[in-house]
Image (cartoon, rainbow, N blue to C red):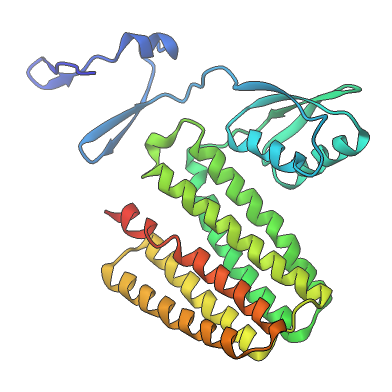
Length: 302
């Protein structure tokens, strides 16, 4: 779509807005619009929203995947959902997921075989940066608390690490909901950001699993294993630093540190007992999950 620039009064340049957009959002004379300069573009934005995005789904057949199915509705950007269920257990599961993960959602209607959930506090694009920073911070804290808990064999501390995964999920889900909400023109490379958020949530899952294994005493966490967690933390902090302030020098250093740690873990896997091999393999998978995001760093900065 192209528009001709009109000069009025010898000083003011005027550009007409598409009539379809004006009608769609019911823009009136004298109404203020937000303008944002972005490189060679100007983005025109109204705070008005279109009608709610609604859906009706039947979850009566769901059991083990019910929570994930409910989460997908949230991440897809729906503002209202009618959810049919079959048992009291399913209803309890839905209520638990709402309380644990779906930020800003509440049950607004409940009947014998269905409920209606609605967004009572819609996510705004301005919240994205804050939520993403909290996601990074929470993961760094999760690593620190895990290492401390392993050092003291503190059951309550390990349980706290497991609980923190819920916080990770809430931040990640909110970020993904914002990305798919139709406000992506205000985010740089939204597809890349979505991938990074997905990977960050996976890192939280790894830490949760390690804490669970420690509680079950399935793994023996040697001093070498604890040291690897600390080295992985350094790699992760390097990633976060480059994410917000990229440099090719830092990117090269990040890669070198990764390959050094990868070699160290491979040696531990080779020289360790069969029981420890499993632990070091899991740490290797965690490290690879971080390095898999390396391509996003230059993409987001260039």
